[in-house]
Structure formats: structure tokens, C-alpha cells
Amino acid sequence: MPRNQKTLFDAQREEALSRQAPLAARMRPRTLDEFVGQDHIVGEGKLLRRAISNDALFSMILWGPPGSGKTTLARIIADTTHAHFEQLSAVSAGVADLRRVVKEAQDRLGMFQQRTIVFIDEIHRFNKAQQDAILPYVEDGTIILIGATTENPSFEVNPALRSRMRVFVLDPLTDEQIGVIVDRALTDAERGLGDLNVLLAADARGYLINMSNGDARTALNALEAAALAKPPGVGGKRLITVDDIRDALQTRAVQYDKNGELHYDAISALHKSVRDSDPDAALYWLGRMLDGGEDPLYIARRLVRIAIEDIGMADPHALSLTIAAQQAVHFLGQPEGDLALAHAVVYLAQAPKSNAVYTAYAAALKDVAETRNEPVPLHLRNAPTTLMKRLGYGRGYKYAHDHDDAQVDQEHFPPNLRGRRYYEPTGRGFEATVRERLAWRDTRALHQPSKNTLGEELSESAAVRSNASLDADLQALAGEEPQIPAEDAAAAPPLSRSQSRRRLT
Image (tube, rainbow, N blue to C red):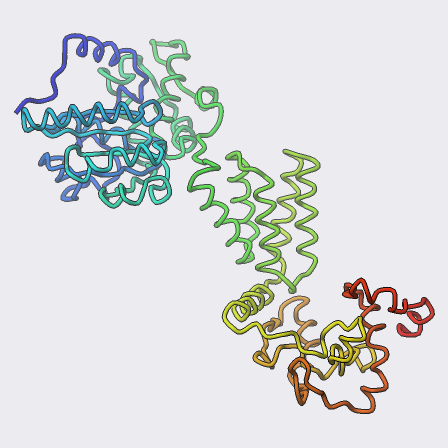
């Protein structure tokens, strides 16, 4: 069975690249025995290792952070398999390229019974149309598709295509694994830096490993830059110091994409750290997000949500403080506005917590959605016209300020929800005071009107009759929207200033 055929020009190009390629490319492992890390998927006896060794491959997605070995595994597969190997980049390839590759795979399978493996780097950059175009050929086995991505395939790969592929998750390399790769590059005279007499100081090695952030490519490229820029010293040795590594790296390798999965993971970690009253962890995740280039206004919006959802009435000032932080960020910009976010994060973390309002509103919405929406009880209705009054609108309403502590024994729910309780304040923070203020709900006698449908007569006590003429005035004092039809507006007497003062005293 024919293997991948290479021309003379291919061999010359590969030889030139092997000399000129960056250190990370030259040191790329050629076999599974050289491969460092990811033992959970390519360790002895693991499925992927057995599939590669036995040339019994299947369509798969390799999902992991930069520098974790996705492309390296694909290259090992290319060098191991008897199948024809095609590599595409989702950044530059289009539907026409996919159709060409599929057509050649069909011909190859028909003429030589040789399978075709198509490796697509950055597969998350393929749009839905491109993924749909390749789906039928993955399903019928015309090609074996291997996709590499740094993004969560749950969001970036179509479900239909993803269901036909196995997903292997690659972890960031550990410090020990990065150390193995760095030491190997220092001693390898054929592909590494062995012929440059490079000596890496111990503190420089630790600094390099730490700053590479689990990315082998970053570590190797920084090491090469530092080595090539360092002139030989005594005995032709090149001693690489921390300052040399710092100059080569410039900045830490930041694994953050404000449009990717880490964006959602980090904001979740920030939210939960605040909810759990851990200001230190909350500040760390805030720093991670801002250092990664996150939009500070996005963080400010989440802090406002935290103030509402997780703190609520336990500390009513939390909402105003987070709004102030958002305004500060908007007004000052960065980096000054970042400190306002840090201020808000610490305040929210130390504040007493309560989701009582959050859960109460959710329960109320559930009743709104799942129970019959009965009419507003007559005694709670606005009654600006004579007709409405004759129909019983507003009749029997008790004005709270005419009663002790402004607490009224009357029902405010429609009949089918009478006696419902949604809001149950906790005993934390300001909500402990709220709980005391609402204790009267536990002992009040529910108001039970004798009838409640539109047009029916209601029993009326002498006290109600004496206050009936004040109903419209009280509604006006309460600031209710006027509902007076145009034809009745002229006949409705205005509420004078003297009447307003009498009602309020």
C-alpha cells in the first residue's frame, strides 16, 4: 500500500526548514516516546496511543491550550500512519479547498484503497457552512478528520460534526514537563542548542518555566532568543541569566481570550469567589481578567449583577456602590478605573449575603407564568371616574398612613393567590432589620372581602363609607397615573394644595 509520496523539492524544503525553523518547531517530538505530557490520553495502554500505534485512527478533536501538543500529535500521526495525510489551516482554507481534498481522497480510496487523514488546525475558525461541507465525508468514512482547537468544541464545532468525532482534552503542561523540554533543547546538538554551549542559570530556568505558563512553544522560543542574543563568554560559554530571559519574553505568556471559554470560566470564578466572601481570590481573578485584556465594563456589569443577586437587601448600599464603580470605569478608563473595580470587588466580598429578593422574584414570576392571571382586586384599583366608583373600583381600600405603623389588614393578591409569601428575609446584615419590620405578616388577619368580581355589590361598613370620598385624593397623593378618560377629565376636580397638606398630616 503506497505511503505519502514526497518529491525532491519537498525533501529540500523540509531540510531547509529544519535548519531555519524556530527552536520550538525543530524540537517537535517525532515519536510518542519523545512526546512529553498528556499521559491521560497517550500514556501506555491508552486508547489514542493504541490507535496511533496500530494505525487504526478515527475522527477526533484535540482540544487544549496553546503549546500543549495538539499539532505535535498530528505530526506524529502523519509520520506513523500508512494513510495519506493532508494538513489544512482553517485560517486560510475555504470550501473549495475542502472539496478538492475530499475529491482526491475519494480517488485515492478507489484506486489504491488508501485512507486519507485530514488535519485541520484551528478548526474552530471554520464557519457553519464549512463544517457542514465536510460532515458527509466524515460520516461515510471518506476521510478521517483530526481537528485541533484552543476553543471549547461544545460551542465552536457543530453538534452534528462533533457527534461523529471523539474529543480528547489536552491539559497545560506542568512546570516539570516544561523543564524536561527545556533541558532537552539545551543538550540536543542536532536540533537544539547543544552546539551553542548554552548554560542556563538555575534562577533563569525557574523564571523561564514559570513565565511560560505551561506553553512549551513560548518557553523554547524565548530560550532560543536569549541564547542567540547572548555573545559567548569565557570558554565560549553563553550564560543565560534572568535578565536575558526577561528581555526575551518581554511579557508573560497570557492564556486568555476574552471571546473564548476562559472568558466565561474566569468571570464565573470571580462571581463565585465574591459570593463565597473570599476577597483575595476575587481580586486575583479580577487581575487575571484585566491582565488578559478583558473589557472592564463587562466586569462592572457582572459586579452590578452580583450586588443584586447575591447581596440584595442584606446590604442595599452594594448596588449603588457597584453603579458608582461602573461610572468610575467609564469616566476614568484604564488603568485608573481598574482600582474602582477592585474597590467594588472587595466591598461585595465582605458584604453580608442574601439571595432572598432574587429567589422571591423568581417565585413570583413562576406564579405569573403558571397561574391564572385574575383581575386586580376591586379595592386596589384606581377609581378616577364616577363610573369606576359606581362599579366598586377602589371601594374598601385602606390607606396605610391612617393606621398604626402604616400596616394594613387587607389582601393585595388576586383571590387565587391569596396568602402567598415570596420574600423571606434572612437574618444577615440589613436584612435582619427588614425581617423584624415584616414580622407583622406572620400575625396579621388576612382581609376577606365578601365578594370580589366586577359588578357585584360589596358589603360596606360605616367607616368605609366615611372614607369613600377620599379614595381619589389618596390615589393622587400616592402618585398613581391618571386614568381619567378625556370626556371625564374636565369634570374631575383637581386636588388642591390645602387638601394635599391635610391628607399628609
